[in-house]
Length: 251
Ligand code: PGA
Image 1 (cartoon, rainbow, N blue to C red):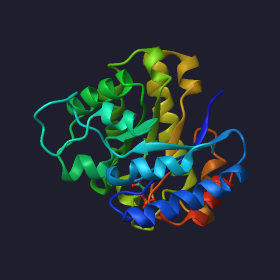
Image 2: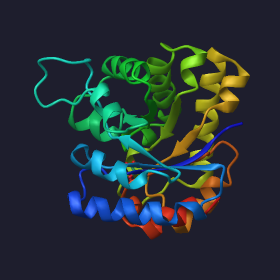
Image 3: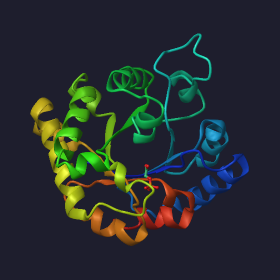
């Protein structure tokens, strides 16, 4: 059975006290969310540990927003998968377009990061998505297909069970411009075909594929009604517990 997930990517927002308050507010109402819908929050590194403590005994899981591409050692400023695991993370987001665009994240680096994350027992939310120029040039299917293949074709069907894909059109992130449900659905279906081509129908059918990009309570229902959209990766709207939960209650 394909799992539904709503994940909140807090990005570089909230200080430790704000973060704790937000985590507590999400945790307090998590039981209202239907059983088959998973909830994940991804606070900044500095308050993963204290936010994670507030999630104990609730259905909300903890994710990092990134991890290092090496296991340990002389990599100043980096945070390893073992460190994430030790503070209670179950997941890490990888390949967010902001990391690709501003921090030189390449598909090759992502392969290393996904390997390390899975090896440490973390689930991975791998982001893919085209930018505005690519969409306007009609290359969106090709770009998303290439990004998906370049990273995920290095893994086994067994490993795919611990990976979730998030389709995030860059032009819709933080811009208030959401992809229409139909625009999102056709890319999600394309991603599922890419997975099927390598791993077969069962793996493709079980794959959770999230939509991200200006998803909010007012548009979540329409997006989640599409057959290949299994939830959302939420940025701005994840910073208010009511909005975040409102999205999760849209199923
Ligand atoms: P947004 O961000 O919901 O603020 O558009 C989504 C994301 O970047 O994950």
